[in-house]
Length: 109
Image (cartoon, rainbow, N blue to C red):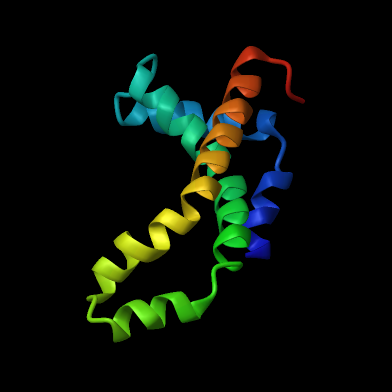
């Protein structure tokens, strides 16, 4: 997890050249999809770190109790765990959006 978070230490100016070359090579330069992909990769380490911290607070006993009650692992996740972590996901989405907005508007250094 430290390696994922360490990617946030790279300055944004250092990534402009590789992003440009990559997006131009795949034909996504000057498109909305290319912009979305670039901002997603920039905010992904922060989002993963924030969600991991929130998911670690969910007790394992909830998952085990759902499995004992007859849920499949997928239904235990969707019906028990996902509603519990939904506020953390919303907070992460809001922070990632604000981070991408700040980078796009040039107010973030």
